[in-house]
Length: 219
Image (cartoon, one colour):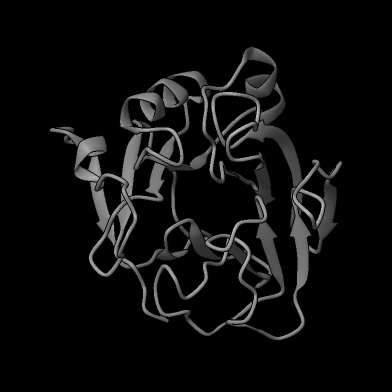
């Protein structure tokens, strides 16, 4: 697992299936060139659905219809990856400001990973139930376009993931993004580990909840 930046991660399953989440366009960072078998897209915005940097002939798993107007009823498997989506919104007003968003639940081997996309609101009880057990949670923390740090911690309390991976926050090189950096989210918490990348197939999940902060990969 490595972080390409923004809401985009590169994941590899135990059987070697390569999956990229929410690829961003050049307006965010220079687009990395990466090989993938699967690309997941939580919603149809330029910083989450840019496919030009993806090599190979990946399956594109969309949480919304291509026009972004409605949710897909998504539930699909490929080799040792199974994924389904949970409908959500990009804002607190049922999508009236920024549209719809899809939460991706990814089952890879024995691990359940959840990517919240550009979630813009707190989860209700039904959404928490549909998401289910969470081993690793990728969630936005920068605010403005999405939930902010305080709201992110409320969602963490609801989902109780073993590992928290913050995303969608301000880092060096981003311009014209009015979002906060990761320090607002981390505060003075001590259960923070830093990675360039990690092999999920061999990692042992922590007994006590941890926050994994990834350095942005340039490739």
